[in-house]
Length: 246
Image (cartoon, rainbow, N blue to C red; front, side, top):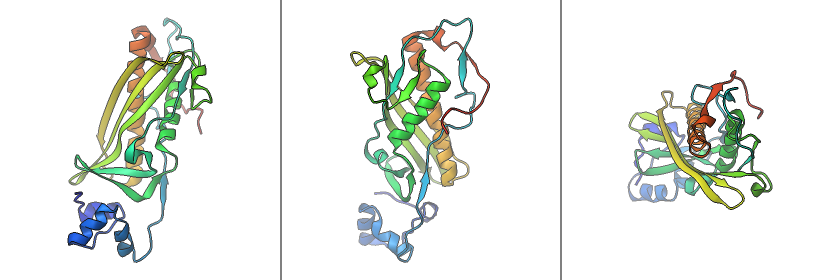
């Protein structure tokens, strides 16, 4: 069973004042009864967060084709909503204590479904770093009208607490399919984990955004090299700026 320290619980806005069998029973039920005891009948205010494309860094900087590089392959890419199983499919932000004890914040939620935020993030990255000549579009009405389909799966997207240290962890699987016959042209997985020195929720979400963008970029580059060849990856960084998404 999850063993949360009082320090970690307070940081999450949760208080554990009951002990013994009753405490364990309430924890199993998702800690709903404890909230009333902690906040004297008042729930904490709801907080909403969103994954966004961070400021460009060397690992996710936009790129433009070099004049000496062959043109990109024809065809557009349909990016379908990511599959977010289990806790990741809920709006509540997920945390993990050590390696196997999972929970989610009762009052801290994603403003949009994870599957949607990651699809939009992928679209932003694919437009900044084109994989094909035509545009990449998130959640189009008819994905099979495009030449390729990008499918992603969330394996990890959470805060991780190990003792006094807080980390952000992101792991996604992805596949690039040929739309006309659904054949898999490439499949891969990437994972990043990084310490969050300032263990606040805004800092954790910022780090999750950064790692999500870096993982998607790694997956995109792996697909580019595997499917379209090393020459397609020979791009030079473009001037840093903002994407077209507000």
